Amino acid sequence: MIALGIDPGTALCGYGFIESVDGSCVAKSCGVISTPPQLPMPQRLLKIHNQLDDLINAFQPDVMGVEKLFFGKNSTTAISVAQARGIVLLAAARHNLDLIEITPNEVKQSITGYGGADKQQVIFMVTKILNLPEPPYPDDAADALAIALAAAYTANSIAYRRLAL
Image (cartoon, rainbow, N blue to C red; front, side, top):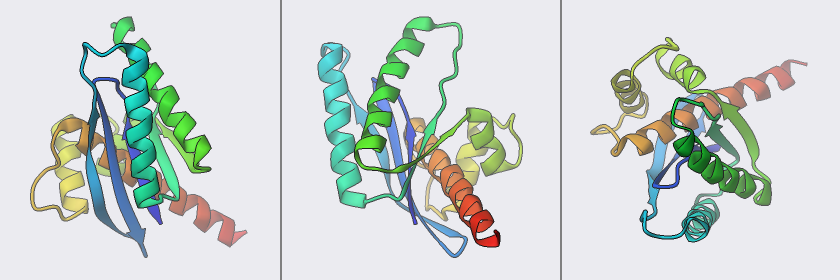
């Protein structure tokens, strides 16, 4: 199974692809889709859409994990993240991908065993679990790989429960 994790954003939209086979996970690709701030928002969203579409076509994931929105104090940031997240959800629907929405704390719990883990603990565990030679960079790409891992664990758990029935 190939899982795609997305850390939505308009400036940087992190993505990570992992392949899960018999409980073992391997990183296939990760990075960010970046858009310049001087570009009008519709063109930024179109760029995210087009690049995400190309990535999905290239890697053919089975499942997509996307971080649920966390509303902090900065509503302007939340709005732009919500717009990017809408593009991500549209891509999942257009490609008929199983979608797993997951909170940041659920990702941390899944990867480190502790929902209150800090970013460095998550990056350390992602690097270790995927046996990467160095930590993924930038943080948005590392977060996307963590989301992909959590989505793969969830999808495998759901498939296992279905088999048990």
